[in-house]
Length: 254
Image 1 (spheres, rainbow, N blue to C red):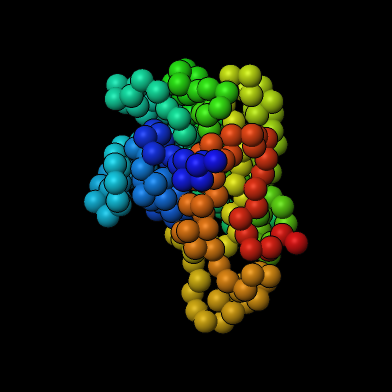
Image 2 (tube, helix red, strand yellow):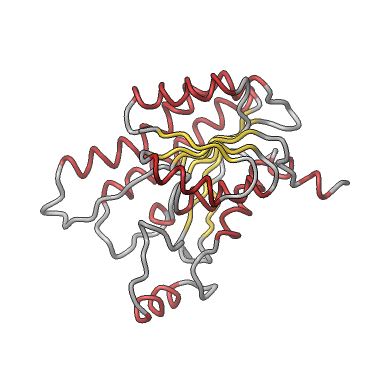
């Protein structure tokens, strides 16, 4: 058994939405470091360009607003102009709204549900022809949805639409895995815990102590933790894993 080949993503083609920052950037960097060609997209051209300049390997930045079907179709057209196949889709782009239950607005509901739940489905739908094109029994194409520990454990923040969207992502992952398995496409979700990013900021030492005290592993997540999970799912090592929600949260949900 060739262990290096078992965990290899060399030569694979990937798209990571929201890949210019946070968890998306961690995954994109890991895949690129491991030899994949990685497309990243985000809404702001300056952030995309800056991220590409700082990332290793074969990384291509695209400016895209995937919160609308029009934006999704534009992004897919750009990918199709450049590639005949797509091996890895990481549905990472997301947002949240935090407000008391008595004040939570319709906009705070719709904006989060649209980006966190509707976008992953329709982007995957539009990319299915490219994903089917080079998928095999031994080495399937891979959809990796980014869920959340917030869909496994109720935290202190009032992020109702976020929790609903991530819970739904966990379940639609299973539904799509069953449907797309015969097409040699695996569909899995990663449920991250506390990874420091633009959406999850530790503001002082007291907050760090509190957060780390909640985690059995005693620390926040690192880029290596997130990249490792994605590389596993996208490599031959993860080819028989589908419909799974993999917590990467240091035991926070226990």
